[in-house]
Image 1: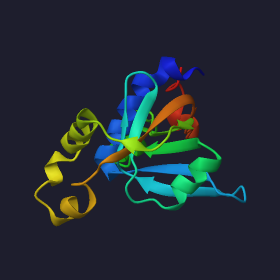
Image 2: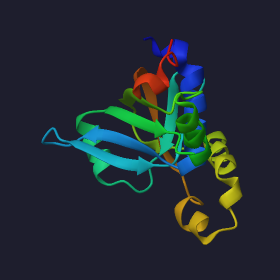
Image 3: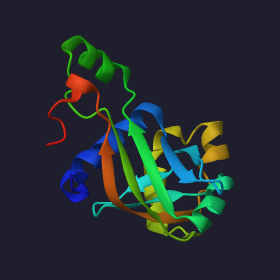
Image 4: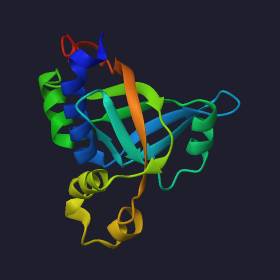
Length: 163
């Protein structure tokens, strides 16, 4: 399946996933070839099969990306009502999860527009101590160009969702 054809569905799933659990899982490859998976909140997708993420906290991820810039990002819509309806009906109305694969670029300073997009995404949390500690000073990003995706298949419950 071609990623561009499904990009609107992928973007929508990523928005729902962030609303339901406020992070995604991003995998890179360690020096010994083993996978390294971290939760990442500050990812924003663009309309053209690209995105960027704020890289403020990871330590191993930047080292891994220097050796191998390939990443996989998993988004799961963890909303209990969404899952409850699907379980009752025996079918998902929308895809519950997807993994997208791409190549990360060099670390750079975020543009004011990128910082603004992130601040809008977490606006409801601005009055919390956690916001101040986690997200108030996001300043460095990496671009990612996505080139493929893997639908998460849940047997008959997801039949026909990725046409």
